[in-house]
Image 1 (cartoon, rainbow, N blue to C red):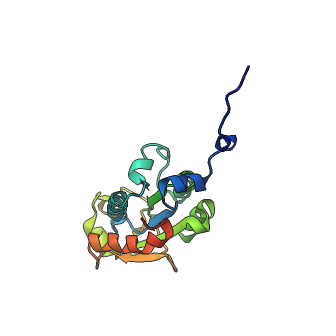
Image 2 (image 1 turned 60 degrees about the vertical axis):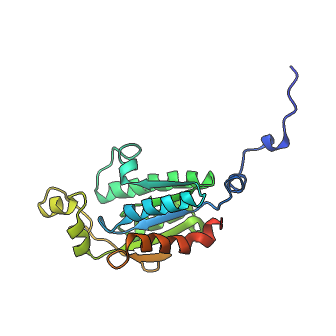
Image 3 (image 1 turned 45 degrees about the vertical axis):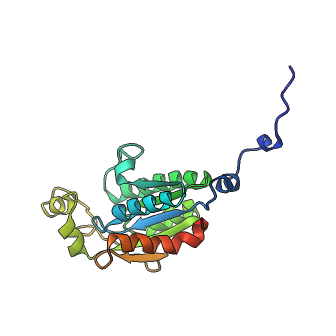
Length: 200
């Protein structure tokens, strides 16, 4: 059987560099950590919209789109949180391999958990952004009513109430959402990450 003359590029799998060149961007994981209600998801969504409008291809990962699928068998114990972040990190690594910018929004409460995420994704591809708001501000917002449930004993091991949050000591960037507006927060993240994702 005669085989077709295949272009040499098909002699190997496409590399991350091939895909980054095609997309005209540098793949990175922007890992947003902070208490529930600190504004992680809101900032992540705003950043995704801004990056999209600037011509970047992105994917947001958060509890809403991972716990209904890949992590739907996990609870909120510390062990389940560790497994949750391990799976998210492996998925993020695949997105990076595809040349995409991954914007992650997870409480990821301990240094150990975030360190594991960084080790899986790779230190050079992991940009840790601390979305910082005081507990009283987060609790006052209580967008999903989780703090109220935790205070009433309906949720056990809730970060900030009966489970600790270990703030990053040296994050890539810290955003204080009790001081900055959403637009200011998104613009600050964008300006900080721009040199790392390839200027358009």
